[in-house]
Every structure is written in C-alpha cells, then in structure tokens.
Amino acid sequence: MPGRFGIFFPTAEFDTMEFLEGSMKFNEKLLEIIVCPECKTDLQLTADKTGLKCTGCNRVYPIDENGIPHLLPEEASIEE
Image (cartoon, rainbow, N blue to C red; front, side):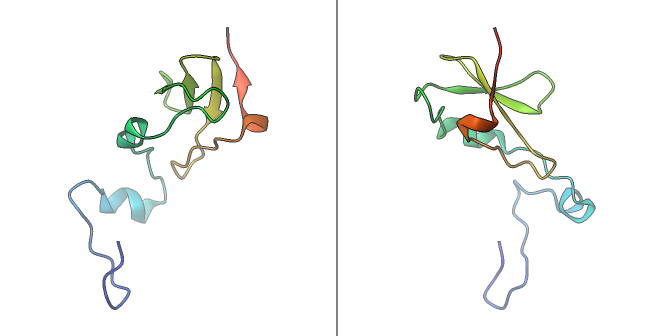
C-alpha cells in the first residue's frame, strides 16, 4: 500500500518482485469473502489457477493476468 508520501511499503503478503515483473497472482484470501454474483455460493480456484468456479451453479469466472477476477456473469463460462 502506498504510504503517506506515495511510497510503496510492501507487506509480508505481497511479493515485490512479482509486482515489478507485472505478473500478480490471485490473492487466495479473497476466497473467504467473495461469492458467486449469480447464486451467492462459494467460489473455488480452478486447478490451473486461471478462474474461479462456483460450487453451486458451475460458472467459471476468469482471472486476468494481473490476478483480478472478473465476476461479471456475462464473462463467465458454465462447466459441467
């Protein structure tokens, strides 16, 4: 997080080198607080870590190259 003067102070949970290389990973701690926007059921990280799969409706929401999940129903695919 930026400090008082806009200086970045990394925390223990943040990998500075990943930030500098421009390839952030999805923060798995978010799985504790986010749910499927359609059915409000828990989400799980896919095996290849490129999406979040709903345990209820089987929608898979993509995670972009910056580690940001796109939780828009129109961007989700449905897996069986």
